[in-house]
Length: 314
Image (cartoon, rainbow, N blue to C red; front, side):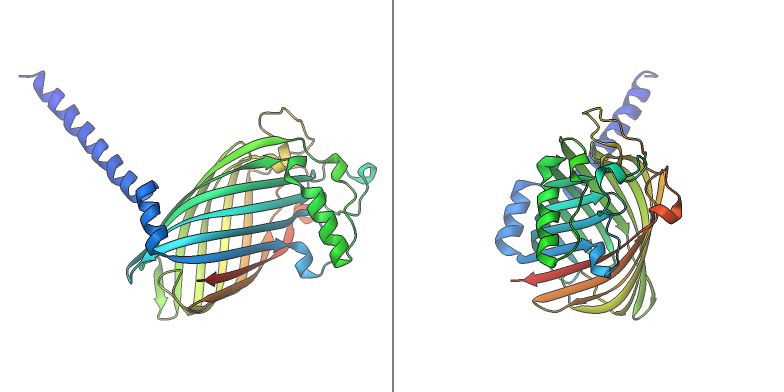
């Protein structure tokens, strides 16, 4: 009898863990049947995101110099919650502090040239109280295979801007995968037109591995769910703990040594405006990112860039 009680206790605990894991899987993990249902009955939206330091009309062009993403999402929901499945294609470009520097002028402790080209899938669930969760997987390639030199050179020729001089020094090829997740416990309503929402985020892979916490303040005509009409200004702050950044260190598996390492803590500040109508939406913001390179001073490594987003709901 004395041996049966511990066994029953262990069995009960194991059952509780299995039930909890089952509930988590049902709530957070994607499934083909769920995706099919959302795609067939949900609302389709096209999204375009653009990050670029040249949008600020400044003379220098470098560090995280460009990020372009295009995607499509399918959302099914009601007044209390919304479930979204989506895909995206993206390209991010990283260069030395000034693209006009030739290879022999680039300091050993400057940011390496690198491109990251990827395709991703994600599942996201939002509730009217602000609680949300997101799970995503991006697969792609960092290095010459990402086409960074071609993209930046042709874009700058089109815009009649200085051409980048240092792509011959870019990091070597490496295929990569990044699993990412986000969670928000909900928003705090300060006033009828003001709210605050915390969020935890994490990425794990051979290109980026990090964890961050952010806080977003919104003020204006707010929406409870992302697909609803809105018009508001926002302020976002983020603190990120970095374990690996291949755009600075080189690929995790190709053993390419660089003279720089990522800072363990990176801060970010964003201020902008968001508008969403029934079928169209747009946002514009300014982002200040602190120095990401351990060997550079904060004054040398801090970055400023603009972010634009365009939304079209079919």
